[in-house]
Image (tube, rainbow, N blue to C red):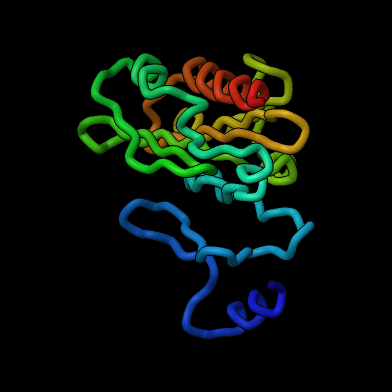
Length: 181
């Protein structure tokens, strides 16, 4: 795997991580990691609202089929004070909710605890112990530790949720994660 990664990173035609300019999302080539195993993942550019690199190994270890199972659409609708929200992307490591006008997205991401520890967010007084918020005209991201080796991240683009709503949603998802069988 390391030889394949070295070969791919040496190619001049692209890299393992690309940015979809239309959605602002980062995507990675399947099976290609930007960091060597055991290395901490790079801290996300939270000021720009980038979502962190999801941790597929954690999803596999916990048997997560769909991260959307941790946070219901109705919960997001209530928090955003609107109706008609839906899931536009569902995966074991990431769930993207969007309003009916396609102007706001809320993304739930499963990240490693190492990634959580590298985030330069501010401590959030509300919610569970250890939660961190990253500002950007309100909280662009809310990070919550979930279990011994994982963190859940709620990212909104543009800001539609209040601080209390973000704290409540990510805390609810973290509790659901901790209660997985």
